[in-house]
Picture (cartoon, rainbow, N blue to C red):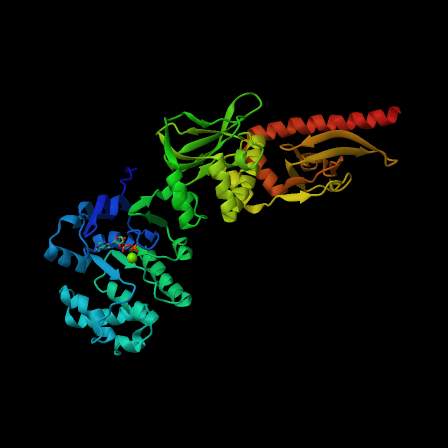
Length: 502
Ligand code: ADP
Ligand code: MG
């Protein structure tokens, strides 16, 4: 196999700065910006008005020139071009879409699209017209080809502007608030045109103030006071508003952990919430014997440490920097975390949902040592169910066809004699399972399982196929469950014996 060579990014920006000289003194509009954009990415650039978005974008298009720093696009050193080089390069490599469309008012729609091909001396005369019509078809504007821009709506003008941006088939499209002057329905149409372009291989940088649109692209770059807010922080906390994100970014200090070192330890009191900014982190669960099993690997843009802060207070797992590289995390102390989850119910809800998923995942993992793929496939198909106190989850004598994992609460295991007298043979708590006996040869339920008095119980019910998926993919689970079923059979047996002797 030939080793994979990572493709050169389409855009590489290093240390980009723009300082404006104003009567009041120097004003830094863009400061120390570093960005890489890969081919085929759809990047949204968001931030408050005046944060430097247009200044940034205008340095890419050459409308504005950097005070210092490098801009490499498709291998070209754009920052060092003179005006003539810039114009020639831009004509063939960039499609630009503006907020106010900027079509030539005295040219027809068709002529507007042909113009960039003429200016850059691309294609033959007949090809230009054919190509322009084809592009108009793409944006559903052929019927308007011979009209003047002033006679069509804003949304239609923007569609024409997109067709114009595509005239010379550039790899990169740059758009500054392309939907800023359109109603939301028209904006949606323009956005989906952009999505089609990305699907066809184009790379798009789009400044937008529309957070909902920004959430739907591959990457979001948030600019605050001319600087980029860490992208992985933004990704991890995508539920927050822009203001909240900026506020959090000011409060956190990145911390570095050496490869293999522990960031949090299972059983310890948790007082911080972590967002992974760089590197990978491994999640381990301690097993009763003292050994640790790897249950998950976290990538940048994911967070951890939320379970102790929103749950019982103790760390439920150990998280270590992975072996191969150091890890950078943003740590948020408990107070900051609490004020954040209070300020953002959306974030709180997301965290609670994730906690539930991670809890189930960890428990399944503990009983079965399943690989992550098998686990994920099981968890994608099943939802936990909550039963009230006193509810009979399994009835003795019934034909059994499912297996249960107790995620939370307690259940009693009861055996009835022929006179209907119940004998409590066992009491299970969180992390145990039941229902395996009927799936391992007994067919009829040998005992009743009832939610213990006082509180509800949450269970994950797996059907026979899912149960077999676990037993087939985990030797440990297979042998453990055989042992457990054997012991339980004996417990039930001895309960019956006691009754007979009475
Ligand atoms: P955004 O697009 O995010 O709204 P801009 O990039 O247009 O922000 O502007 C960023 C900051 O730079 C603003 O404070 C703006 O006033 C300032 N600025 C932009 N252009 C100039 C200029 N030519 N001279 C001085 N200041 C400027
Ligand atoms: Mg702007």
